[in-house]
Structure formats: structure tokens, C-alpha cells
Image (cartoon, rainbow over all chains, first blue to last red; front, top):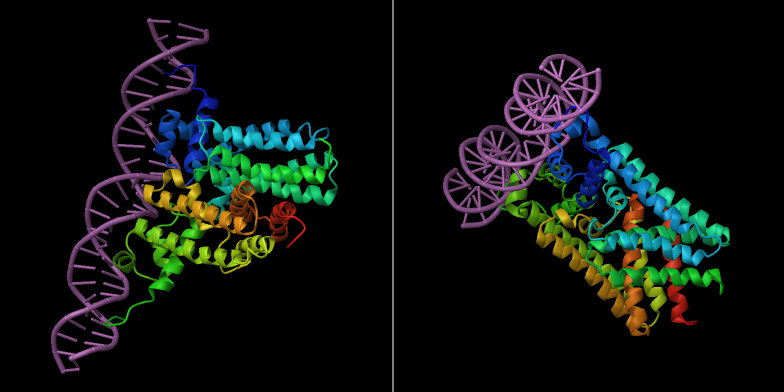
Length: 196
Length: 196
DNA sequence: CCCATCTTGAACCAATCAGTTCAAGATGGG
DNA sequence: CCCATCTTGAACTGATTGGTTCAAGATGGG
């Protein structure tokens, strides 16, 4: 096959993203990427860039896709902040429950590998964590939480969300993952007061 | 140097453990280990085993060392469960604050790399997570928490503890890490009642 | 029908990987 | 003093790494 048509870059990027997500940067070779995408080595190189560039594109894709989902989940925070927080965790829990997708989290995996990754990649992963924190803080403030509590809970929610990535890889059941977030949601419900 | 004496195996193991801890299994070469331990390649191979064996020994060393610290921190759980939980997190927070030691956590790092590690190593890492859960559940039950709450909070505490490994690598400040655990401790204080 | 365009497989490169072997040298006990 | 014991550096193997090039082939537009 050749001529005018091309393979589907979006599909290839998804495949590469999933591969990086499952195995991490270091444990993903170009051969792995070739196998995962069904593309030739030279095709990857010519149209997706080198390994570092491709990884960065996959990271962008990941944060954009799930960032949108997190935003949507938190969109009702002003009216029902507790429901928003629950929906926020549901995005992660549903992703983990999806058998089509790897466990864990590409951002968590990347952050953990920070000491051995290129500066640009490490910075982008840290930025994603910071953005998650900002997202949560904004939502909690909109939910009429005072600044100090919003700051603390934003950090806490972001951390617990990342912990799900670790625990899911440790074989923790979905019920236990749910129990982990329920403790957090109960704590949030308490500071929010009787409403919601 | 040769003859009757030998190098200090404990020191070498510590150096290897720190290297694995910082860079993970995949990103640690035998040359890295040689540099970190100050030992020759062949010395490592002959007296510390191959890479897989050595990693397993380092993982055992890590879990034993900090397992003891976590046990000690939780030893007062029957009398003062909240103080015990606080001391539990302090073990992790002090480890992260120590400039001599890497950020993160060897167990968390290993669990995240589960899909690409040998079965024995992956199993050992999962076992360490399970042991942490058991440790916490036992302590919380001793602190007069009813079974259901002890189960939930044990999972939650273990997860938040692991989240500190991720967040510390994301550049989160110690104050923010403290805020993350304080939310959890407040929640625990509430279910424990007015005492402690 | 034919040519421009694109994809593909294969090969190549230098570097690194884990693993292993071994002779040379240093040391201490007897 | 000398020999058994241990450490060391160096070298080697075969495999794999990321990166790059290129000729051959397939395709579609004109």
C-alpha cells in the first residue's frame, strides 16, 4: 500500500500511547512500538518522530484526553462539589476497570521515572500534576470551600488519585480502590457541611 | 587488596539499593551498579548475584528496614491510634526529607514496573504492599476501630502513603505533602472519636 | 498508461546491555 | 617466606538498543 493514502496517525498514536502507558519509557523499544502500532520502524521515525518526541506527543495526548474528562466531571462543582469529586475519581476508576486499557497511569509512571528521563519530558509530567492540582483547587473553591481547605483538599485529592495508579498495579481490587476514595469523599463531605 | 579480608557487603547492598531506588530496575545497568558500589563487575556477579537476584535482595532489604520503622511507629496504636498513624506517615515524610536518600519509594517504583519485571520480583513487590495493608489493619483494629472502618482506613492509609512517593517525585513541597496526610489524619481522628 | 508519491522491509551503524571468564596481582595465615 | 585465597581489571560474547539510510514496490492522480 502506498500512493496517496496514509495510515491513520491517530490510531498509531493511541497504540504507541498504550504501549508507553503499560511498559514505561525505558522498557519500550522501537521494536515494541513497531509491533504495537503495526508500523515500520522507518515509518515511525519519519512520521511520528524519534522516541523522545513520540513519547512527548503521547503524553500530551494522554493529558488532553483525560484532562477533558476530569474537567467534565468537575463541571458541576459549583452546584454539587461532593458529586463533582466523586465523578472525578470515577474517571480514574472507570479507566482502571476498562480491560482494554492498561492499569496505572501514564503521568504517574512518567513522574516516577523523572530522574532518568529527559528534562523536557520530566517537566511536562510535573506540569500535568500541577495542572491537576489547579483543576481541583478551582473546582473546590467554586464549591464554596474556603481557600485554605480548597488548597489542602486539592493536594489530597490529586494525591489519592495518583495512588490509585500505584495500587491498581499492586493488584488491589476495584472494591478496595473504591474504599480508598470513599474515605476521602467522606472527609470532603464533612467539611462541605450537610448540603450536597 | 585481597587475601583474607573482604569488602563490606552491607555497604555495597545499601549502595545498590539506593541506585535501584533512584533509577528503577530497567534504568540501572551493571555499570551503574559497579559505579554506585565501587565494586568490580565480576565482584558484583560473584558475591551479590546477577541483576535479578541482586534487585530482589535490595527489595528485601528495603522492605525489612522500613517495615521495622513502620512497625515501630504503629506500636502505640492500641493506646493512641491517631498518634500511631501520624508516626506512620512521619516515617515516609522523614525519608523523603532526607537529602541523602532518593525521593520516591522502591516498592512503589517496582510495583509501577510490574508489567515488565520478572514474576518473582513483581510478586515480592505486591507482597510488600499487602503486608503494609495488613500492618495498618492490625494497628487500627488494636486502636478500637471496628472491622469495616479498619479495613477501609488501612487501604486508604496505605494508598496515601504510596501517593507520597509519586508526589515527591513530582516536585511537591514537604508542606504540601504534609497537607495531603493531614486530610487523612483528620478523617481518622473523626471516626476515632474525641479521644486520643 | 505512466509518473509522482508514499510505504515498506532490510540492512547498517555505533553504543550499550547482561553475563561470563580468566590471568594477574595483592594479601594474610601458617 | 610462601602458598592458598580473594579481588581486580580487562576482555569477550551474543543480543539489543536508538537512529538512519535506501532501494524496491505499491498505489493513485492526472
